[in-house]
Length: 177
Figure 1 (tube, helix red, strand yellow):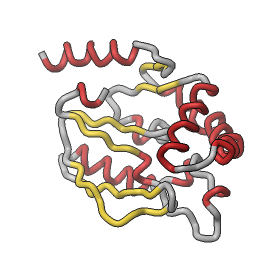
Figure 2: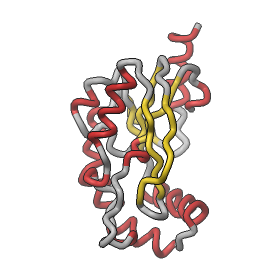
Figure 3: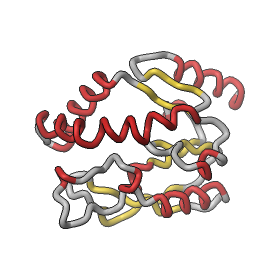
Figure 4: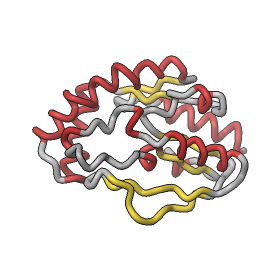
């Protein structure tokens, strides 16, 4: 979707994880709770981007559970997309948004996608990923993520629904022609 939108930057919340504490093994750490994120830094960067200033976005290592060396400079553009599970959680962020959408998919589809992605990208086993899903991901979805759906201007079924494509087409027509 983003490659169809000119003058657009993405601020991914996944780049703003806090370091996993050394005393907690990766398989015991809940990366899906809002407490796992550095919202102070994320909100600060969001404020800077909205005021026209560049930010130095951190890199997060999913295997190590730690921030990695280096940053990516994010230069403000006309449009900014905030991407992440907990983007709609804080009212201060919601007030800044001109439009929001919530991507929803059936949980069986979501777990299949997550397993395939993580087995390929992070070399974890299906058993590991399913255990993480049952212990952390699913409970966080019901407790923290799904309740933010009510704040979205558009709910998109991410089960190959075309409503997001239609929204992008409409946006492009209204803003770029």
